[in-house]
Every structure is written in structure tokens, then in C-alpha cells.
Length: 230
Image (cartoon, rainbow, N blue to C red; front, side):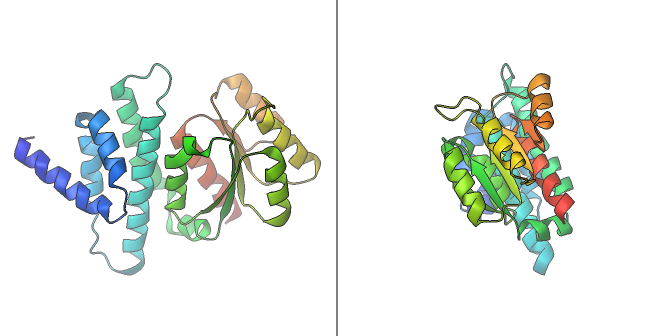
């Protein structure tokens, strides 16, 4: 690719993502993984905004979700992952979004509300944006007690929780256990620092829908949970 071609690519991508008011995502990813992600953004650049009506709206939602999910993968790389491996994870977001966001799922997402429990919500900005791009409403909570109060007042389609919230190092399990003992069967996903087999097994044993530390897998789990309710 020549310098001129690359400049044209950047210009096209910038115009596309500026529509979504997310140019900072583009800048962040290009600075860190530019060469490896040229193909990824080229794919986004091929999305046509000339398609009329619902299909155009769906394509825009997919593009926004894919960009945010890719940014999440880049900003939270797996331990020991090389830049190339992280870039592949980001590019995989395109396929995941494309395959998961069917018209039926998008309609379900537009009617869905998620409770996200995390004492440091800024750690999950891109993950949240990838879901909000689909029309999902997300309500934040920073503590187990606050989450339980919100659950009494609002119907949630999915609950996402981190694991440790001071002073409770297993606050995710605490919240999950309280909900299940009360008969609340809302799909519960633990998004924490580990997805070790033993931790995933314990989460499932306690009644969780899933447990992961990967943005792409979190996205898939949420959409799977919503799809079962469609």
C-alpha cells in the first residue's frame, strides 16, 4: 500500500467514524496497531451508508459496535499476547458483530436493559459502547448493595458483574448467590480478571450464565443471553 493509498484509507475511515462521534477510538487503535489493523478498518470502510431504511441503520449499528469491540480488545490485551495476536483479536470483533447481530437480535437489543456492576466502570468503557451501539440500555452500579436495590426497582435482561469490590474480594459471587437464593434467575455474567477453567466451573455451578475476561466473549455471552429471551 502506498503512502497516498494509506492517506486515502485514513480519510475514508475518519469520515465514517466521525459520523459516530468516535474519532478517538480510531486514533487510539491506529497509533498502537496501525499496520496490523489496516485490513480491519478497510472492511469497515466498505460498509455502504447509501442503503435505505432499516438495513442502513443496522449497518451503522454494526460498524459502531465493531469499532468499540475492537478498541476493547486492544485496550485489554490478554496477558503475554503479542501485538499481532491482539490485532487478530480486534479484527475478530468484526466477524463476531457481523454474525451475532441479526435483525431479530437487534430488535431484541433495542428493548433490553443491562445492569453493569463494577466499582471502576471506566475500565469497561469500550465494552459498554459496543453494547450500547446496538441500542441496549445500560445502568451502572458500583456496589452489591446498590445493585440489589436497583434490581428491586427495574427489570434487567442481563446482569454483568466484576468479581472483587472492596472489602469483598468475591463480591461477584456474593451478588450472584443473593439473587439465586431469592429466586432471581436473570442471566448473570462475571466479567473479571480470570477465565481459568476452575473459575468458570465455579461460576457456572453457582448459577452464572458465563464467566470471562475477554471483551469479544463478553459480547457473545450477552447477545446469547438476549437471544434466548427473544
